[in-house]
Picture 1 (cartoon, rainbow, N blue to C red):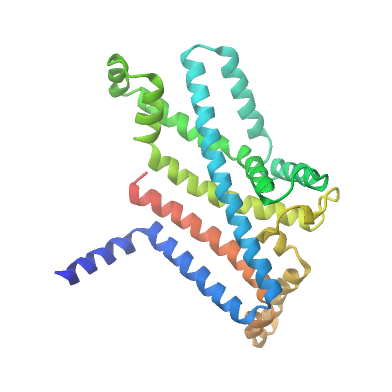
Picture 2: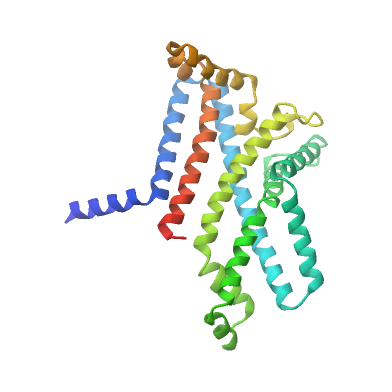
Length: 292
C-alpha cells in the first residue's frame, strides 16, 4: 500500500512540470552555489550572491507592484464604464496606451537613469528606498498585459447568467468583481501571468543594468544602482570569462579551466539563462496542469 502511494505521488509529481522545474531550478542553483563556494574567490562570490539576491528581490517587488497596480486600474476601467464616466475612462485608456507605446526596455532605461540621478543627489538612500523605486518603474511597463487579462476575465463572466443573478440578489458590484470574478474564478490565470511577469522582470532588469553598466548612459554612475546579475555580467572580469568560452571552441582542452578559472562570468551568465529557462517552463507547466 505504501509503495503504491509513493509511486502515485512520484508519478503525479513528475507529471506536474511546474513543480518538477521548480525543484530542478532550486537543486541546480544549490549545486552551483556549492561549487562557487569551493572554487570561486571570496570577493567574487560575495558579488555573485549579492547580485543574485538583489535581482530576484527586485523582481519579486515588480510582481507585487504589478498585481496591485493592474488590479486598481482594472477596477477603474470597470467602474468608470459602469457609471458612464467617459472622461475618467478616456484618461485611463490614454495612460495605459501611452505606456504601451513606449518600448519596455527604453522606458525602464530612462526610469533607471532618473532613479540613479536621485541616488547621486542623496534623495534616495539605501536599498529599502531604491529597490521599490526600481520595481515600481519596471512594473509600469508590464501592467498593460495583466490589465488586459483581468478585463478579459471580467468581460467573460459578465456575459454569464451568474453575474446577472448575483446582481438581482443585491450583491454589490465590488464584491462580484473582486471576489467572485477576479479572486474566486480567475486567480489561477492571474497567478500564471504573474509567473511570466517575474521572468520578464528578471530579463528586463538584467538587460537594462547591462546596458547602463557598459556605458550607454554616460549621465549616471553605475555604482549608484544596486549590484545585480546584469551589472555583474558587464564587468570586465565577467566579459573575459565569457570570451573564454569562445576560446574552448578552438581549443577544447581548455574546457576544464572554465569551471575553475572563469567562474564569475560563467556563473552569472548561467544563473540568468538557466533561471529564465526554468521560469518559462514553470509558467507553461502551471498552465498545462490547470488547463488554462
